[in-house]
Length: 291
Ligand code: DGL
Image (cartoon, rainbow, N blue to C red):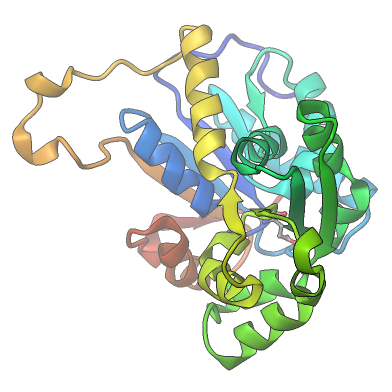
């Protein structure tokens, strides 16, 4: 049993975690789908990357990160990391049976299946996500006739964390990793799913490398929709004043509060993370923690 045995309450924040800043791309979608909610985001920057580590280690890290968030009284846990979702979702759901615990793989698989006509789907992820096969299994559950091609693109994580999301180095890495897609000719996938939350910031170079004719999706929007549905189902949505009752100036702006935790490099987390979140993060807003 995890640290929170009490029933979750609607006014508590939603906990979100990733190995680094990648999950901020999911937080961005969550903020937009759930503007009345407060969030607590944890980036385990000291131990990144997760994607090249063993499943056993990723499960251990994920449980420690989740314990930290649950100990701070969250009402829902979002695993905004494909690698951790693939390795640790069942363990986290068992440990926090009283909380909604939502990963990004099932929502990402749903987005990929919904957008593919041919059923040929490329999954770009970390080594661990691709080798573990969780995405393939999720896609085949939804669409048994699908053909899934997994490509491990581990270097994309470092490029995204470094902020090298365009230019010659990013383009060369994308061209090299995605050669099998271009070489497939008429049998090429029509859908590319970004199965790592670090990858959406690299979408333009990925799109340029795969060429026209392939759609690209990620799991952020479908994960946010899944979280919203689950909170609603459990009566855990934080009530906000109806649109008409709020001042015009605040109608489009996210209103909830976001707190950030990082296990290393708060200044770096803030500067790189702002790009993923799409809004500024100040270094002194990021609390340094040890897990
Ligand atoms: N952002 C994580 C994911 O979605 C992984 C990055 C890492 O390797 O730590 O898979």
